[in-house]
Length: 196
Image (tube, rainbow, N blue to C red; front, side, top):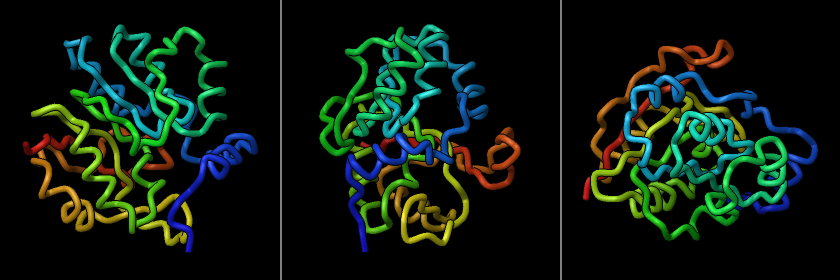
């Protein structure tokens, strides 16, 4: 069973346009959340950002310390072609586990689903390690399994609680109120605060 998905695996997804997770614009629950964030200097990471619609949206809204990460070269190429105004210095084209900077906020948008269940504990520990004290991991999770042996991998509320509760305070963990129509009643909006 494959538990590691290579750059070539993800590059092929973008080359063949097999990117069903990409809705073509910033996700409404995330847009709404950041409408109420006044501090535009927060250091924010969007890992596994793909076409990075959220990064583009936040940059246009005046958030100047946004970092997008993807290790797919095709994803980065696609993003830069679509939105050339995003600073190259804020694009992290590497494996998520190789990131060593720390951030105030890490944004989740379908990235968790790319990890095989055997990699989830490592993922949670990495998120925790690159957040600043009191930092927040927030965004959207699918609240169901997909039944695949390849990405996307879903999970249940019970699994999320088991994985994250040792490392984070659950500030918000509830059904998303304004998901796009195909994802209605299928998403959890969450804000987790790092336990130091």
